[in-house]
Length: 175
Image (cartoon, rainbow, N blue to C red; front, top):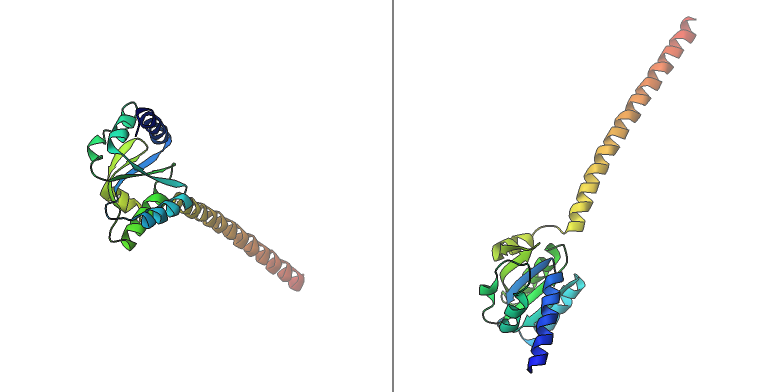
């Protein structure tokens, strides 16, 4: 690769790393081209990207970025998973894909919101519901609370109506 090409790749990589809220470094040893393409496709469906990078270029791209010191993890074949604010969907894809492909790729380290997280934390994150599912669950809980209050008020009004009806019947009978 010529120097101008290396500079262009480094600049592109630096821009992508700078924009990503979530970065997972993976070791993809043993994955063939078809498997890598399948992984890329699954990640794209979750608004994530998988890039194979030359470690020397990645190290240059990291130089001016506000990221934790993850340089020591750029050894051997390195693939980057880059995504937006929700780290769970991409972690699920990598974990599920690895389960189907002889535990490949392997997470080396993660960076979420500019903080380094261990590989085990990424795998645990993969078992969590997505942000949308969590928000839906919270909304459901809030709705259930409100409908419980509404049901209680409706029961109270119904009881008052029954008491008024009883009083009216007594007055008619006695009156």
